[in-house]
Amino acid sequence: MQQKHALLAGEQSGNLLTTYAEDQHEEAIMLNKLKTSRAGVLAFDAIGKVTDEDYRTTLIPAIEAYLKTSEQAHLLIRFGPEFEGYSAHAAADDALLGLRHLHDFERIAVITDHHWIAQGLRMFGPLMPAKVKVFALDEEDEALTWVAW
Image (cartoon, rainbow, N blue to C red; front, side, top):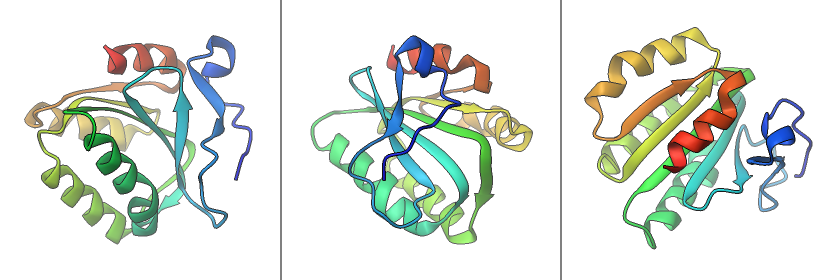
């Protein structure tokens, strides 16, 4: 499933590519792995309603494969205007993933204009061992630079 994503700021800067990773499944995946020019950064775009299937087929395998060869991950997740929320099972998967890999993330950049996501991360981010920072949608280049540091 390759599709153009016109909202990615990287279209001008070249940091994030405008196509999704080629290895995505054909069914409707709401959590898409993005290609990035920065080594060591796992980048994802959340669209629609993210489900536990998205975690099981996309996010968890990508993180666990990366951690087999690297000590810590740098994670970037974009929640654009197309993002509609999480299923209850996806929220549970997110919590379990966070607990299982509590010390495996060095930096987490979240790009969003969704107030509830930004507010939640500003409240709970300081409790996490990883450095967590929220960026607005128009700060995508800054987010990629920060998370790759």
